[in-house]
Image 1 (tube, rainbow, N blue to C red):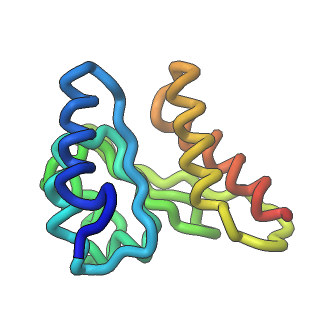
Image 2 (cartoon, helix red, strand yellow):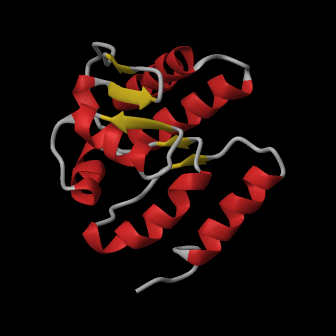
Length: 148
């Protein structure tokens, strides 16, 4: 069941943002297959779709990061960035597919690492950095959070 900003309100907001020339990012939280119709309707208006690997597997029904990213790109996302824990991240757009490794850190608690990654990534975009440099910055932010 859709509540709050899920589904159509989110799609309308993203569509309006794109019409006004904004760059859009989209993270998801603990969603399952039942969320797919709501997410799918938003993808054409998302510049950077950033689910965790687990969420991406659940939504796409695929397991390989290349296939997962291709799935989301084919459904309209401009870029797909999979947050992949100790594996770092896997990203793709129409031009390339690539992995960015995680930093080696002494992990104490991973709570909030995904959010820190997204925040660092968006901060990088805001600085005018390209996708790879922004992902590295997000990865650094997530690594710092993991150290407690």
